[in-house]
Length: 422
Image (cartoon, rainbow, N blue to C red; front, top):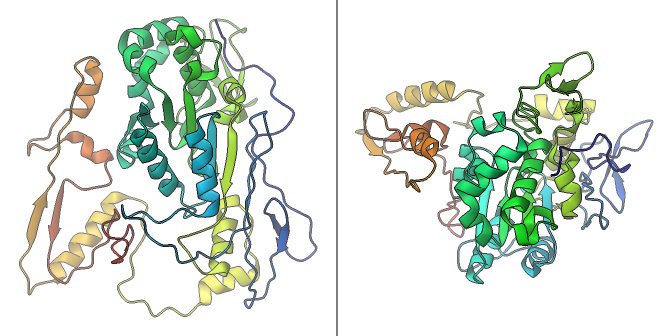
């Protein structure tokens, strides 16, 4: 039986951000070269940032420095044609010889690559399952939660690993044994102990390949470790399922039943700190070319935000004192109730047109096996819509009037400019 993640890890830190010392301005390492960030607003260089995720195997794959997006042709299915670095990544996945992790900042095309990979793998007859750690993120990729794929509920972690293996075998052995490729999105939200549980339970179910990482399933993980952290790491003991206690003074999680069941350091919560990650020997790709923005100065500022690099005085001046003639600009708010309030106010201001209401057409297909899934996702409100819509990016009911400003949340027609965010 495999225990929890070991107390020591490879000497190479999996997540790194390199910065060179400079008396005037910082450099952002882009792998093969570093471009200085000039304090001048007239700066025209293209900067990028880079992180390295080590899997204990081959060196990370580096690509060209970040540059403004080129005009990319559109494929027949409405998706943009892949860039060189994206195509290299897709080809590596499709060859099926390596587990693959790919990352990159917002706008680098991670979603485009993911859609292409899923579609192409299925076209070749591969049995592919797409997962994400939360219901909201799973909906966005037309997948399922990692809990659902494994046949778990959050309560299952109150049991030790041996019992969890039995639960997995009972609830999910049929589709796990058929799985050829497992895609995990938003990997930054998957904790190291969660990934270790997945790894060991897949090995247990796929007994004929239990010596291989994830039971011989090709794993494709994607996400950005600069974004959301793991959800509730080290909540329950890997070995016995007891609730772990957190010591703020040491930053360690401890099992009350046995000191040998740990301890676990908070800094080791990331998926790339797990035994499973090290075993998987991922081929790692960092997508660097931004396709969503074409202003190199703005791109550089976004990269600084992503990596926690302080703004220069010129950066701050540009943000605070720039000319702004945008009318009816979209506001970004932290809470959905604030968004709803403002949208209702704007809707009331339109008096010359009648309001039209559109109601969602939804449903939940239950597999008839895991009762808690039906209880959670199949429950309905009085109006007949699913309660689960509170975790969905689309509203249950949308009220519209002619002339009102709207924003698309999906790509409808790229050539016509009807894209996500327009």
